[in-house]
Length: 281
Image 1: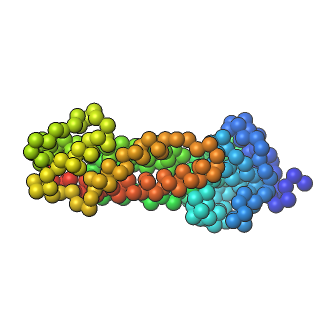
Image 2: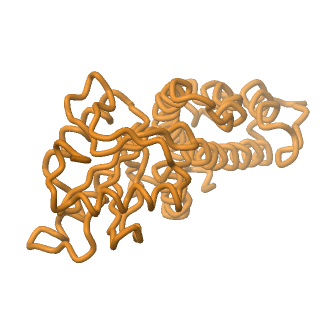
Image 3: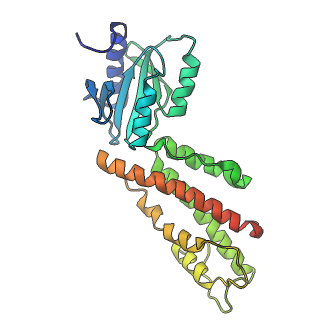
C-alpha cells in the first residue's frame, strides 16, 4: 500500500500532485505521511523543502480546507514556522462547503491546488505561515493619500516577500520624514544659522541627524515621544532586511525579526503623520 493514512479514493490525486510539484516547482524529495515538526502532532500527506528554504506541507483532501487545518495553522503561526501549507483536491470536488472552504483557505494563508491526473491548477496561492500572524494595517487610521501604498506594502509582505514589504514600508517613512524635515526648515523652524542637508539627495540618516539636531523646539513642538530619534534608529534597517536567508533556521530568525519590524514601522509611521498633521504633508 503506497499510503497508510490517506483514504484510497485520493491516492490518484496524491500521486498526481507529486508529479505536479516536481514538474512545475522543481520539488522532488518529498516525505510521505510523516510528522513535519515534533511540536505538531499532525502528519502531512507530503512534506519537503522548497528552494527558498521554506517547508512545504501538502495535505491531500476532497475539500479545500479540511477542519483539522485550523490547529496546524495556529501552531505554525504561534511558533513562527516557515511553512507553506497546500491542500491538493481532485478537480470537480464540490459540495456545500466548497466556497466557504476556499474563503477560509485565503483567510488563513493556505494554498489550494485542483488536480486532474498530474495536471494541476493553483486556485489559492500559499503564504508563509511564519508571517501570517502579523497584525493587519489599520489603513483607515492613515490619511487617504497613503492607504494604497500601505496596502501594496502589506500585500507584498504577506504574499511571500516580507523583506520587500518591509523595505516598501521603510521607503514610505523615509519619503515622509524627508518632506517633513524640508518643510520645517522652509518654515523657519530650525535653529538660526542651521546648515541644511540636501533633503532629497543626502543619505536618509544624515537628513534625520540634521533634522533632530537643528530643529528649534521653541519654534516647533509638534514632534513628541522622541519620535525623530526613533526614526533615525530605523534608518539602518533598510539595508538589513534585504539579505536572503540561506537556511531554514536563518529564515525563522529573519521572519521573527521582520514581523516585529513591520508592525513597529507601521506604528511609527502613524505617529509621525499624526504629529506632522498641522504641516499638511
